[in-house]
Picture: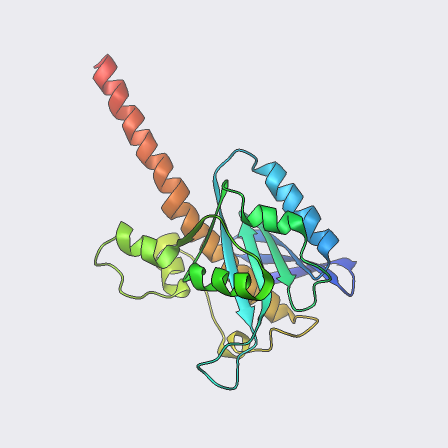
Length: 225
């Protein structure tokens, strides 16, 4: 079930939403203002300082008339827990250093399907790079050998995280260069980034915690039993 609430705080260059998905309320900021990007990045960096985390990362661009060609990236989506930032790269007044530093922070592992390709576009088009990235499709194939061949995000979301997603083609193929994104576009990219985050959290954070727990339990029994 997907729904949204748009707050009363609406400005021509920044809009805030609360996207409801899978029982969660994802606080979502859509902006092309560097100052808003800086505020979001600083808050997230402060909240998770010293705590290794995954961040869902995705990029959208307007479909090209020629299927083998790609237009310039129009939006960058970042999601951690229930916080999502959608940056309208096409209209941003400047790329702040705080965003560059955030993407290069070793504390954050940026995850998604074929995330290396997305980061490559960001690097070539906007000079943005990530220090740590992980492809959740490849990680899932390693974690569960033989279970997946070439799963999409929708498949992984259901199989790994129990999240049911819909991907309407009229939204997937829509114009991501629009200055004012439609509600259905905001929902779509927010949920995509959130799903990548949830899958990455299960694969890289939750799994490590379970492994550590088993190790500590084994040590306990060796010492006290």
